[in-house]
Every structure is written in C-alpha cells, then in structure tokens.
Length: 151
Image (cartoon, rainbow, N blue to C red):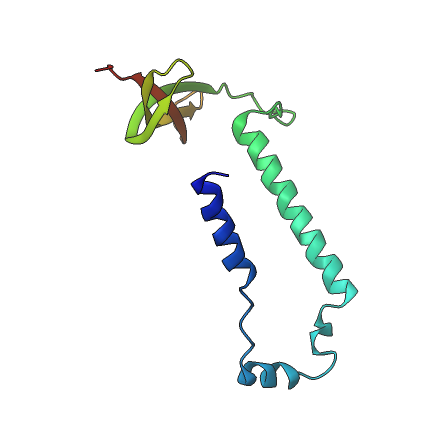
C-alpha cells in the first residue's frame, strides 16, 4: 500500500463517520402542520394533462429541429401557388473564442497544448426575389492539438 492509498483510506474513514444534520424543530413543526391529503392536488387527470403537455412540447421541439436543420421535411406549396425558389449560402468559421484547455501527453511522451476554439457558422436563406432573408447562426466547438517543442 502506498501513501496515496493510505490518504484515501483515512478520508473514507472520516466520510463514513459523517451523519446528516438533524431537521430543525421549526421545520418539522411546519411539516407536521400540513393537513393530511394536502398534496393530493395532483389528481390523475392533472397528472395526465401535464404528461400530455410535456409530450406535446417535446413533439413541437423535435419538429422545429427537423424543419430548421433540413431533416427531410420538405415544404409543399398549396395548389395554385407558384413554388418559390429558396437559396442558401453558408459561411463557416468566424472564430469568436479561443482558450487554453490544458496539456495532453501522447503515449510516446510528446506534449500537446489543447486549444478550445468556438466558431460561429452563418447560413442565410433567401427567397427568389431576395425580399426576405433568414439568418441562422450556429456555434461550433473544436479542440485543436498544438505540438509543444521539447526542451
């Protein structure tokens, strides 16, 4: 057993002796003063309604994600409407933040500086007449390894 294991053992022994603090008497009195069945406000109908609302919100979020990201949902113009051509232009890589994230050592012992870069990609969607445009900004994170010189 080395010194590190002994330190961990001592720490675990101290942690095992810890006990939770007692609930203050004032708090216990307030809890006991709550009438029986007061928490029954969540009747099955309310519970079902909340679950339905959560499922609807998730479905809307999922549909919005696929519509924005172009997940295969195509807009079909209604009959009698001329299809408007939509063009898109994507610009990649405007770096907005670059920070040092530490040092990484490879198996062969070489050291690399880890740099965390955040860039913003911009996509511009526009109609055939360029009258209306939608700009979509998406952040993108990338970790770069920069080799450090050995001394």
